[in-house]
Image 1 (cartoon, helix red, strand yellow):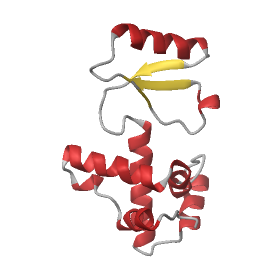
Image 2 (cartoon, rainbow, N blue to C red; image 1 turned 90 degrees about the vertical axis):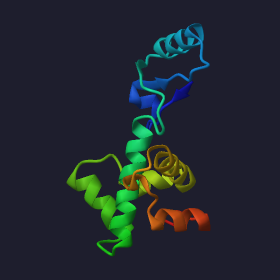
Image 3 (cartoon, rainbow, N blue to C red; image 1 turned 135 degrees about the vertical axis):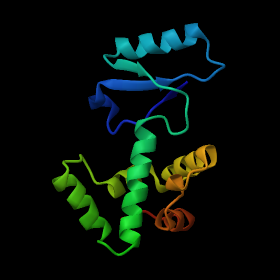
Length: 138
C-alpha cells in the first residue's frame, strides 16, 4: 500500500491510497479505517507510477526546470510567478526542493520508463542538480 504525496498531511484532510496486488482486502480496509479515524477522507487511486499528486508535482517541477534552463527566468522568479500568478501554495521548484530533487528525478525516470513518452524525460537541470546533490536554492 502507498500513500500519495501531500504538501502538509496535517492540513490536507485527504489521503490518496493505492494498493499493490499483494495487499489483502482486510489490510486495505484496516488502513482506510485508520486514516478515517484520524479524520482523513480517503480516496483510492490506481496503482500506477507516480500516483496522482506526486506525478503532477514532479511534472510541474520538470517543466519549471526546463523554463529556467532555457533562460526564461531565474528559479526565484519562476516560483514567485507561480505563487502570485496562479496562486500556488509554493512554487514548483521550491516544491521540488522540499520533496527532494532525487525523489523528483526517480518519479520522472519511472514515468519515462513505464510509459516511454518524451514528456516524462528528466529535465537536464534536474538531472544535473541530482547528480551534484544540489537543489534549486543551493
